[in-house]
Structure formats: structure tokens, C-alpha cells
Length: 111
Length: 112
Image: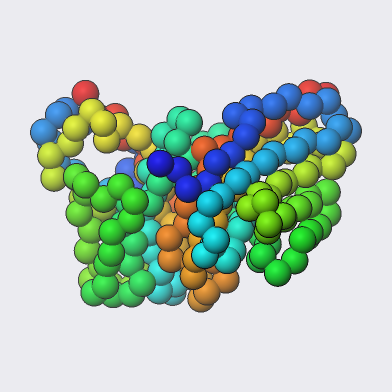
């Protein structure tokens, strides 16, 4: 039973468009919510992360929105580029020792 | 500075065979972990270690053994491989308590 539910499984967006990936969790003890980006044949790499005391965090074209009361968080990729084509995983943890990952979303950006 | 190095990158086993996936890091991180990645399942934690001599189970530990005799190495052992263990395995380390994991490039294992 996955502790973090991620949707959609895949999405296709045109270059310059917005990609939105959603995640939901049940465990209110989670205190750190990272997003990882994975390219084919590579290991995941940290993209951006947020703690539950803030509602939004932005780094360049990537923004995390966090809704503590709804137990949901999402990743927005603005002005999507072909180089953003990858698989994205949301995750959550308490204390950092055991990270629970979502199932992943494959994003394809069409030029 | 190699970061996290996994070997082998590819391996094919027959059911019942044993093998060890190697993970070595040169970042002096205390925390090391093993994940398996399966389609539609994301990454699931198998075992982790917070330092030499200390290991603990993750979400899916059955069928796997680990030990941590040095800070640098964290091998994952399959004692009797099963087809259900066909997967891509990732080793990851972490610095301090920031939560950021540093992953190796993965080991693809097929069990026939």
C-alpha cells in the first residue's frame, strides 16, 4: 500500500506549456516532501523540496504547492522544455530515514 | 569524486542463485540505503543503514540481506533469487538530515 499516491501516470505537454503533477498522502507525521527527477538510465536526482510550514516554494521554472489541510502537494513545471522530459517522483518522509515515493509520472514535452 | 558507484550495472540470474550487488560511496555519508524500482510502483525502500554496524529494514526487506562494515560500502545480498526480484536496484546515500538522497545509476537484475 503506497503511502503517497501520485497522478497522472503520464502526461504530454507542448513546449512552453505547464505540466502539473499531483500527490496525496495520509500520514500527518510526514515533515519533508521532496520531488525527484529521473532521466532514462540514470538514478533519480533531487529537484525541489518543501516542508509543511510553507504553502509554496519556487525554484526557477519549478514550483511546489502544498496544501496541509487537504494533505496534498503538487509540482508545476512552467514553460516546459524538451529537456524536462523525464519521470518525476514525489516523496514524503518523517525524519528522513524512510522515504516513501509515489509511483512516478512520465512527462513528455513535445517541441 | 565518483559519488555513489553501483556494480554490476546488469545481471541475469537463474532462480535460486545468489549474488551481491555492490554499492560504494566516497562522500563520507553516514546514511546509505537500497531501493528497488518497478513499473507503476515507484521506488521502494529495501534496507538502510545510519552508520557502520547499524542496519534496519525498509518497506520490502524479505529476500534481501545487508551488512555495513565500513562507511564506504553497503552491499545488498540476494541469497536465493526469485523472479519477483527482477527489478532495477538503486543505492542512495544522504548527508546529515537535509533529506536529499544521492542515487547511484542503478543495477538492472533479471531473474529467470
